[in-house]
Length: 450
Ligand SMILES: Cc1cc2nc3c(=O)[nH]c(=O)nc-3n(C[C@H](O)[C@H](O)[C@H](O)COP(=O)(O)O)c2cc1C
Image 1 (spheres, rainbow, N blue to C red):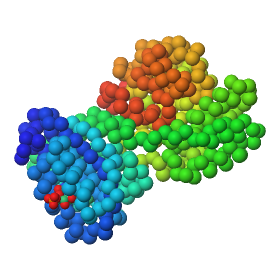
Image 2 (cartoon, rainbow, N blue to C red):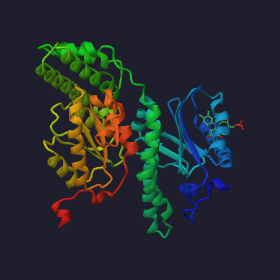
Image 3 (cartoon, helix red, strand yellow):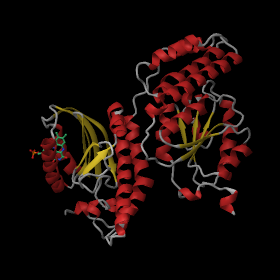
Image 4 (spheres, rainbow, N blue to C red):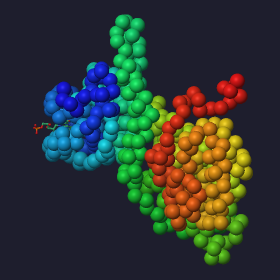
């Protein structure tokens, strides 16, 4: 094996998987493409065999998924080798419509056990593993890749972790038969799960986010929300939804701008405070309905998770809740463990972060008004939260109109991150949150204390 595979961390080779400590930078690249003609089983086997031979020489590992005429491939390895390979792959006449979904530098191999594994749809009742270099994939994952290809980097990173878990379980179960348990591989899972995946997901998530398009009809929607009968507003929301945008895009491109338009209408004396509150209530209802309707379609149902816990709350004394409702929705859709609360005072907020471990606290101010005058009070709330937090490295995110209008305001309240738009919330949190205590120490209950 070349030095690419060398590991300082462990004496056991683990098929090169344990090169978390390799000194050479590794690159990863994920792309999708269409097969020019359907690939038969022998075609695929030939492709995989050729790929494995050359990948071994280049020190490249990965996963090639083929399903219903589409390829999605994860490649990882030393940058130079990967680039050489990419020259060949991207120009290969067997596929077309090659589009890169993500590129990142990774400090560890995700699919290090294989010079190139082949991922195929898992048949009903079939186990996850077929041959050593084949992975049976659940239909839900393939569906997610088909409908939201931009999620492929994060979905495959999670798949890698899941695969390692399964591999660990298999290794443990063979221990009884006198076979060796590979400890290095087990600890790799911890590294992947706890550190690398969140980082990689955040890296991939950033540039892959769809550009934010503010809907031109937000002002019209705001006016419709002010009428006594909100049905026309709901009809407009439904019509705008029909073009297939995600819930995040809907929140960031429509609901938040509509909330700001409501604020502008109030400022120009076109409506009352009561109208604004009522309009916001309608928006929250619409979001709730969309959330329920799309819950099974949008949210990954696969048995993987990145266990980050977030407390979402309006800043104490903030009466507008839309920001927190949207933030909860964004975190939940990104697979976070979300607790949403409405603390009246800084003491109540402090108690919440004192009683349970949270990686992140998301505090929001009004999505309608830029409440500059509320910033000192929010700063006091954040100080109180830090003083009481069970997690000494609690990451604090703030959102609301003021942080949209004046992005630097987050520093004035002592937050780690200020987000201007709903679609930045979960990726930013994932990027900044520091992990602390292990899962079983995260809840402080009387039972656990005693
Ligand atoms: C979807 C797809 C994925 C491929 N993946 C790899 C790969 O991982 N490694 C590889 O060496 N070749 C891969 N190939 C084949 C290369 O394009 C190329 O045929 C092969 O590397 C031999 O290159 P050469 O003829 O320039 O030596 C892939 C081809 C296709 C269509």
